[in-house]
Length: 115
Length: 113
Picture 1: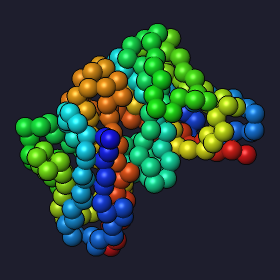
Picture 2: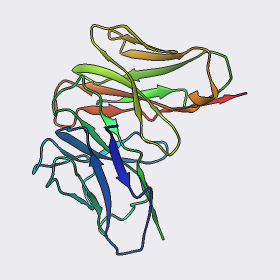
Picture 3: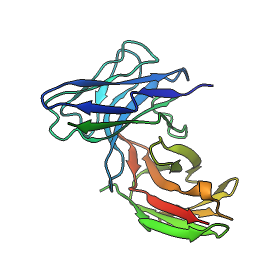
């Protein structure tokens, strides 16, 4: 079955440490996204990628970095510059950027906590 | 300012009962409106997508309505089941803008036996 796989499910970070969240999709989708979900707030866009080797900042990119070296992979690094990283992180993909009537498919998220 | 507001924030209903969730938006220019279901600890799953010209769309026991004039949408759940317990998120897409998806904060539905 096609889908999006995020790993790990739970991740703990020490102060001053960078951590990388994995996102892999086998849907052959061009566009991929990273969102952050906090209690009582709507999803907020961190980074998005329209196509391989391209990515753009979303609304809350500070303290995060991404890469898109392969179509199926879009890892997110939470750097030590992100002062409040505790959240639920969701990766998503869609067939093509700019196709508004196509749904986004989401992974099952990674919950990041600070030790 | 583009915003999506959902009500109520949370809702508890008895199994077998119907319920309706509300979504009001100010997103412009409007492209489409989506409802997602998110189980605890999981990612959202798309239920429906409605464009400007559609005012009703069903997916099993879920029926979404859209009034583009008043910028309101509702999600009606019929004959609720315990598995309907989840958060329901309304997402509105704008026609323009690099980041053109606007997310509501969700309604947390709990179905009790």
